Length: 630
Image 1: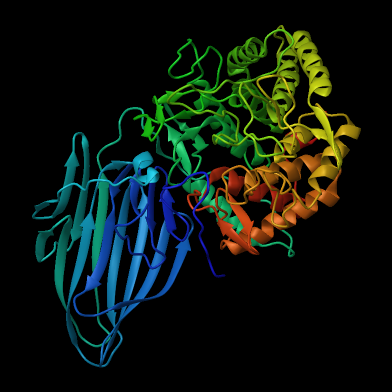
Image 2 (image 1 turned 180 degrees about the vertical axis):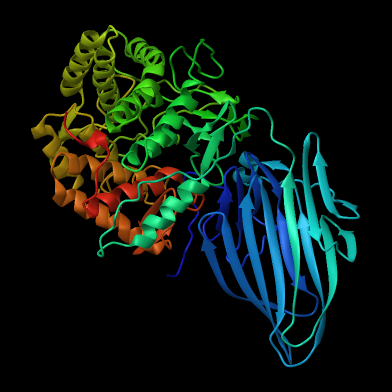
């Protein structure tokens, strides 16, 4: 379809990803134009971890224009591009094969003379590197390139401890520096129907001791998709999830899903937990690896800068930290209000789904520490709330973490501290599930946490429910003055699978989600279109996030509201078709078109996992255990 990109209203200046093609085998990702050329603009380039090691990889033939013909992804880590060199008396077909793996990129360029006469030409490769941090690239600020160092076998770039190397086979006949570029060339003579090829290998500096490693693909229990739904979407999502898998260097057998490409190709507590939860019918192994990777980084001390606290589950881990604009995060950053409860929920759900008994038992001390963190954070008779970082960190610390994500119905931004509705639901489910685990494994505390959950549910019922002209619904949050923030938002959908709502309350939420102001026809809007703050191409105030829609679909299915679940689910599947089955992190219905948010990661782990879960539901396959009643 015709693509139009509008710059987002709440993230001006950031680097646009829409329209780029991504090949990945985490932690390596290569972004290019659809014709395969890696041009020196925007976000294009080879990333490994949080560094861009190559920002240009462009082939050409002097005096002849290269015409793109076709491109095709093979799984997540391979791609093929076909172009033509059109001359007066001959036609040369150019095949470009790209493969990522083991933290490097390998390309083979093959020239095939399909004409009836011989031809002589000179193939050129232009390469460039800036060795810049991914967050800096994302911010859109100008970056400085690194001078190429030419040697007999290729090119090398270096800055401090970072290096990038480009090697070719055969070695280039000519090599020169042309401003910021290294230019390698090969004279080629092609007889009729003859072929010639060259291989390029891009390799970054070796990983550090804390850098995440490449991981083997997962052994998925692939659901059967019925004829009425696209099997291609299922296979694309599973391939992308394999491409996003990372291994913990502290125990490489433990794998988890990196959040997304290219900005978040690392461990994110919330994202990795939700991805594993939605995929439980396909694998408990992914859940177990995710739980253990996060448990190894669970908070043990109080640290103001990192926001670490004993028992708290980490928000994100980047060995080099994150510095971009006002954000200045240490390597281990704990600024999240929901990851700790979600970790407890995943442990309980993975246990119910068949995670081995001894593996669950080994994580019970982490569970107890996480539950204690919840109890301390909520305090006596309160809710789980956050103030946000005063400087350097995230202002909002739920899944809607942009600065203006929580608004009143008139569009006014709500004052912090904020107690989000879905976080109370997660905490309720975590306490109930934690109690079940403690009781089953003969550890103390089960009665205490069941009582804690019951009291939390009662407080929620008294404080969060509000009314407007369309009836009652849970407020998105309580603000810093303990007032329920008005205006319907998608957050209420997350409550459906927590067990905290009565059957009547769950039906009220389902009815509200069915309204056209939230059901866009292509998924669930994050904010009602009737809200004063609504903007379909904002990050969290009216856009559609696939994982958010999937959580709603599975929650609705769990309470038997298949009318609303099917509408939202079918809408999500239809939207996937607009993006060649590779759903972006978020998108919008804008002026009658389904358009990607300009900086949205694609692929994104919880978007792919959500699509798999929705397809499974629509095809009658098993739902994740967290959607089933106790």
